[in-house]
Length: 362
Image 1: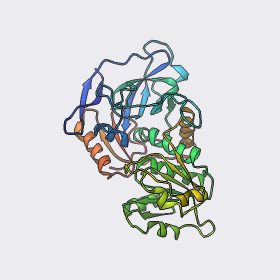
Image 2: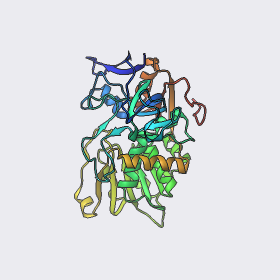
Image 3: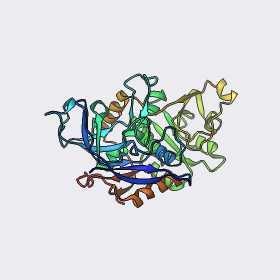
Image 4: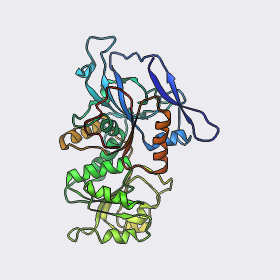
């Protein structure tokens, strides 16, 4: 029987992982039957285990990110949308948002550990609507492909759709480098020809970001970091055009003096759990604070196409092997909870995964 991993209730405030045997899924004619080869963690998965996320489920599998292989359809001679058996695909981590650039058209749900959808990628077999699947970029390993969907989609929308500054030569500040979304923003903006600057609490992470194309970086633990960053900006363009932020807190207060008139701050998360404020000085500069959450099916397809065309590789920090390796998977959660990672944390599930091509050395 296929295996899944869910959470089991804990009175200690941090739900434990549970391995389950389940019946194989029965896909409808509009769905694909997929064998999951790799799945990746996101911060929301930690929040689910901490009971800090709404509508959590103790029955449905965890995780939203996944790379998989198409299996023959058990009820049809062909698969929908022309997908063929053995074809590698990646799964859209959300459902209910087709193409509206402003917001979801209706109820939007994120895969993994939720009572709003039975789907999650931390399992061996999954049936997914064919419209929510894209061919995996050929240059990516399974681990890299699994690392792409949620962070890639969130980064693409925040940078390309919402920032208004996805143009060559623009100065973009990406906060909290090391997280999956922040790294994907760096990669997308660098591919576009932007000048990318980063913040971190780690000098090592800043150095690694520079090796990926960042022009410079500052330690946000230094109270003078805005002044330090100002000195790094190009003389011919001495202000920031946009800030892409996933931490929240006082991001407006920290950056509005560095932003040009009409500059943009895009907020895609609040890992600091601090609420942003909007000082009147920022209002007078016409600073625009924009919220952004994941993205549409259309944006997902655009993002995957750019990754393929620009040969972009998501950064994978660490991989563990086997769905039965609960101790190893728990270790990935600990890395994420403590902020030790630089890039994505991945579980390779399938024994036939494309694990050698492009795999980072661990």
